[in-house]
Length: 285
Image 1: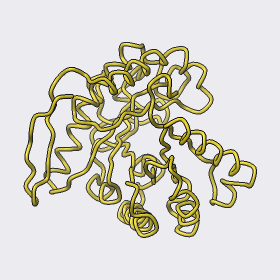
Image 2: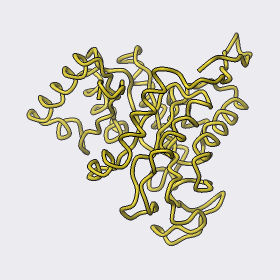
Image 3: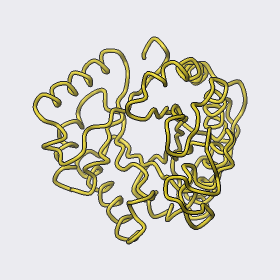
Image 4: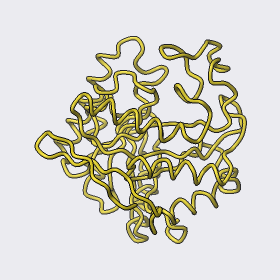
């Protein structure tokens, strides 16, 4: 990974409480991963998606890993606004995300906290209050439909349904538009958050996506993130599909990593918060 130009890895622990997610053997293996990452100069995003709703389990994990030199940031919750999480009581669920954020800051306070919203705008300001970095999930390539959910057998529109990419057109530009729109929503609410982006590195095996992204699409999605001022780029490969990711997307991912290291060759808008006033400047990327 280091030789290919990557700088961060995002491992996902098993489900359940901290005591079962990290048994002695798996904890030893993960600690070895952290040590190897630090030796190689690779940072780690630590994922608490299975424990952020349980303060004791979340606290145990924070205390365990907060001082490791490989730790870059916390990933508190994965698509907390998505299907199965918040529809019945969004208010109480957004409070849970914020409480997890407060606990992480109380016990650590040094490493930033990130979340990944699934929707185009479902209680976004409330969820964003529980994060320093917003990393929207936008997976537009190979969608079998943008208007009818083949998984849930329902329509998809501005207020209902899940087609794999909320309010998307099924094109690369959906990635940049989502970041731009979420930034605008938070700006209207007077909120200043950093944004990263996720590049789709899966598809073609059921659910909503009929095919893998092509190399040029991977590169263009990465470029969309950079153009909208994203400070980090991740690649999501679904569990069990890694072999296909390496064959179909690896070259594109390496090219994005190279461009991120060497520069994209154009200017972007950079927002700076000066005492509550947000000023837009030009910066070369």
